[in-house]
Image (cartoon, rainbow, N blue to C red; front, side, top):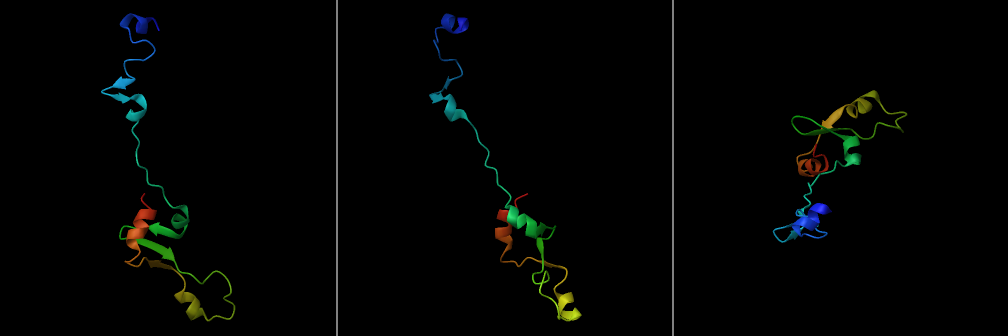
Length: 92
């Protein structure tokens, strides 16, 4: 306060006005991309792309043959038409 009265700035500081901008316009923000949590629980990022578990194996499989259940086990890679959307949903 004593420094402001000597310099003659009053209640404004020297840093509040810079080149015609007020201090609120000098706030810099980063555009952070958020991970889509629903996608993150279903898809895993690999070196070549993305992979997911196959659907249809969780319940209601009584009476199914072992061969048909074995086909539904394991992981499957993402289709090439989904890659762009998955990159946007899982940026990190």
